[in-house]
Length: 236
Image (cartoon, rainbow, N blue to C red; front, side, top):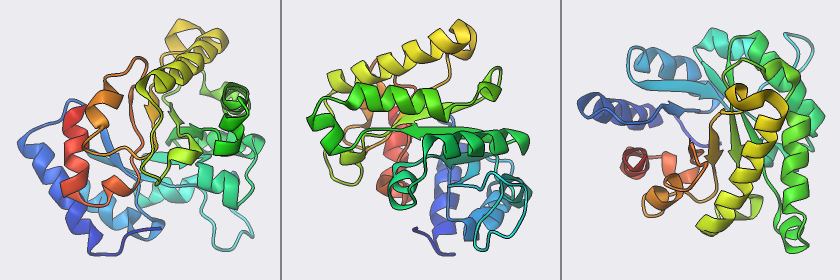
């Protein structure tokens, strides 16, 4: 829940910098819903995609204050983040609900970024593998076979805390996720990018992005300004 009209200038600065010196990675910004249409229009033709932060599973209905995947697509979004830890925590979203939203995103032609991750309490008692792989199994519907999507591993305890797992810990979890994807869909569909999210910044991005099975980053606070975001992009 960050971003007013002035934030469009930051997105424009990111796109301009990438137009001048193209990045070696795909780049997307997922702003609040109030900015999606304006940002999508402004960034049309640039190397920066625009996405939403959530959607309802239904196409339409009596869900005041909510947005359908079709509404996001109509506003110019091409991607959507689903199952973010804050949605799971503050809105009690289950993995089954996340899976329904993923199917809605596919229905509307959006590329889903599906988030999974354990809390500090779950990690402290050694349940991180059980929790993460359970979320992977239950949040990713069969409809993803042959479709473009990403999985984002975001240890909840690392988000906004300034703490990050060690590179070895990140590689271990990402390796487990990769094995689960390949076991379910085979080598082809099992190669979806696995992003890391949780206190990624310009100082640690290069090491994280160089880790085995890390296919990108889901960036939070450090994506709010071009000055902070561009060094992460350049590290890819």
